[in-house]
Length: 389
Image 1 (tube, rainbow, N blue to C red):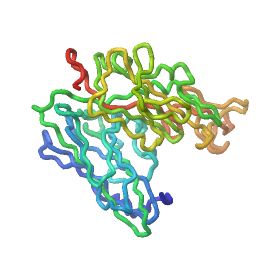
Image 2: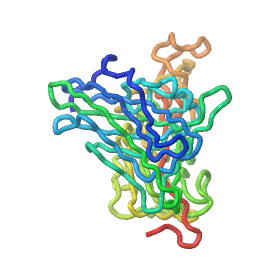
Image 3: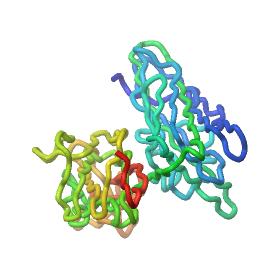
Image 4: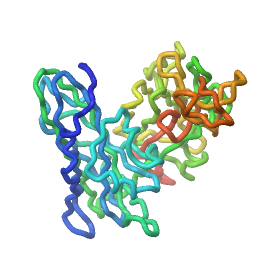
């Protein structure tokens, strides 16, 4: 794959504007969003991210999303290119990042404090790709509302690209993302993003260990679906399933479960590398690109059914050890709901907790903490006919 290297600041094209082309101020037919041009030195595979903000006061119903890559070829390719919709509340910080392209694994080094509140809506590595939704279905992108004294309402996106330059010469790359709006009269079902983070209540990994969120009772119950907390009140027609982890996440597995918790996965699922003999409806091993389970025909979830999920996280076995400030009592700092204060040496710690030591890995808001989240896209089932075949 070549060596990773820091992108020189002069290659980041920070002065190039991020454009959103609209057919009209009221209801644009398309949104055209640009990833600025990068210069990729030979024998490297950098990963870079950019935040894009589009002014909007009304939802944008998407029929399809097109991704166009410029500069790619047989020896210069896209490893991954991900389009995330921001669903947090601090869109104003996107404005502060205007035009800035940051080298970042998993896009953990830029954006607001709630940067993890994002949903994968499209991906593509071919020179030109287009993903859409079933006939009559449109994905509704709801704008983040404005705040007093803050920027106006709008849509926020995070673009995450990784390129592989297998040659010795420099290449140039850029990308264009085109969101095509659905015709209002053609939309019979509105699809929505969904997210669940209940598994994080079971995320507690001791130093030097690999552990599953299922090790705690709270993690064993983690699931999303009709009639469950955060789920719809009626049946759900699931079009896409994916997940989110941070850099110590080794595997995320998703199971289809019945009302009594019985696993109902179809045969031929994804093997679990940490539980021999166990397979899942969907599984992800790369925290920077978890991939997706995309359904041409919706996965129907009835009342009581759900998508159970769990993460296997590594705190110092093959990934870096989490360090935190704690008293020299032999107890690792950090617990569920209260991550340890970050440190690298004792001088980083306050007088009351002067010891920088091995810490428990738990869920938290910083890149040094972990997350375990189930994301996806669904539309409500028809009360009579359910989900279309």
